[in-house]
Amino acid sequence: MPKVSSNYTPPLLFRNGHFATIYSGIVRSVNGVVQNRERIVLSDGDFLDLDWSRAQGPSKKLVVLLHGLEGDAQRPYITGSAKILNQNGYDACSVNYRGCSGEPNKMYRSYHSGATEDLIEVLDHICSTRQYSEIYLKGFSLGGNLLLKYLGEGNNVPKELKGAVAVSVPCNLHDSCKQLLSPKNILYAIRFKGNLLDKLKQKQQMFPDKISDADIKQIKTLKDFDDIYTSKAHGFKDALDYYKKSSSLQFLPNIKVPSLIINAKDDSFLGPECYPFKETDHNPDLFLETPEYGGHVGFWGKNNITYTEKRALSFFDSL
Image (cartoon, rainbow, N blue to C red):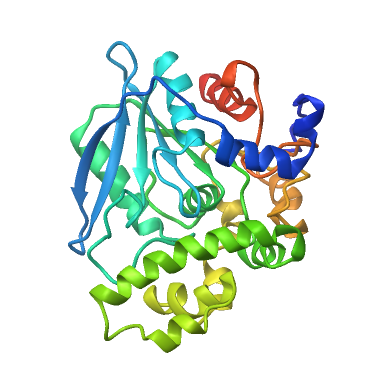
């Protein structure tokens, strides 16, 4: 499907990608979402926490929400999405990845950009315990890459799954990593690395035979973290092998569910290879929208409802 035109025109301040990104991530708050937590046990004995919020009346429609790197189900981009969906007749299931719900997960492994096996278990659980006739996916950043990989890698997608929206997606993980290691993103990289190291030190206490102080001291960049922990804990050779195998870009041609990707042109986390123009041109089920502005998950909107929250709702309603 050819590129989708965008009518996103934010106020002047939000035409600065960094301002939009920081406002969305640090300043914005969302109230009025009531979440109820459900813990599910995974096939390997670990657990995931799902935070459910409901439409006002009984609903047969559900959106599964997937957060980004070091996020959780209480981030404003998740609760904001849940709020508008609940107000318009959709239930929302906000997934906390392993170790992201406020409690360390049980295994040495955790989550990563390509861990679709956990998404498969979430969807299997929902389909076996609930009676939704329509299920949709919406993911942000890492979560967007995760859902696109899931849809295109040959899984047995449930018949109830009708569509997906992916926002600010690093479709090529190596390209995105190079951007995050560049000077323009140093403050974001420092923050991500700090959060990841805090969790890794928790893992060290739980599994002292698997990671040493010397290993942790070697981690100077996000790529170092992926070389030393992410790749080794999840069965990859190294960071580059992880990026190659987990990037959604290679799976986009195989997607058969209507899917909308929204990547802003001023997203400092995304390099040229994160904008899949060729892939969307050759797949009628893929839609790519590239607004001039938006930063990384930073799409402003009036009345504290972001552009992508309204856009996702209209996309789901159209299917």
